[in-house]
Length: 322
Image 1 (tube, rainbow, N blue to C red):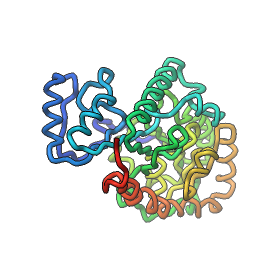
Image 2 (image 1 turned 30 degrees about the vertical axis):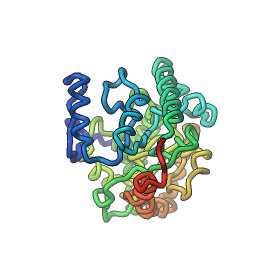
Image 3 (image 1 turned 90 degrees about the horizontal axis):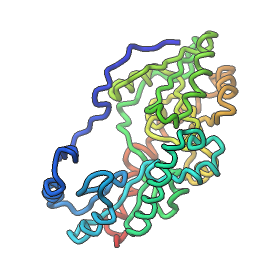
Image 4 (image 1 turned 45 degrees about the horizontal axis):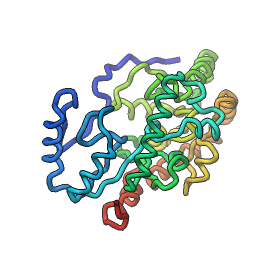
């Protein structure tokens, strides 16, 4: 197994922003409200991300108060959800026998259950458009619209095709989080370490990687193991598909049934992960076409075009907020 040098994480994600707000602890509610009014001056639409309060402090304020205020200011409001902020743990366990909620710490699951229930109630009561960034969340909020995650596709392009070299394939697994263990690393890592010890694969398992370093790391891999417990897929899988890497994950049948186009992801639920790896290693060339299909799928759904189309009814007013 190869482990690249530990990189200093720093700020893993950094994006341009026209306005930056100080941490709520560094300002008073009055000061934050005044600053937000200045930021929103001239705006016509507000998309509230992750159910975070617009004017108040996290944990002390309620969007149920903020959204009517924004509407009275003449702003059209929508909500955007990304996962645990909306997902029902009990429903997830019921449809997915490998659900990470079944093995995660009970305290964390209880907190997630209560928060998600509260957010679903807020979203339903407010009557504003709700967008979800992963398709499985449509099972928790059927009235929502899928807003596909978007990436800078050109950042991930690499000329080297996957699974074509004579040497053992290089496999990368770098979960964005390991606590709680929602990606299945506790199952994935021992299998990959064993394969690496037997010379079957070259295993990349960096401890900490800044996001800016990920395109190079992914380009050096043939296979990217994403997650095998969530039943859906997220940004890491999209980035690997954009690089035409073979993505191993698990998109459960109810989620696949919702999708208009099937993602080129090899399903490897926990009870079959080791077997799937053996199947791939026995005939890697047979999986090269699946890897090669990734960029076209990303171009259709994750380069920003599909997201813009999903937002269009909200932006042009054909979806009327209440």
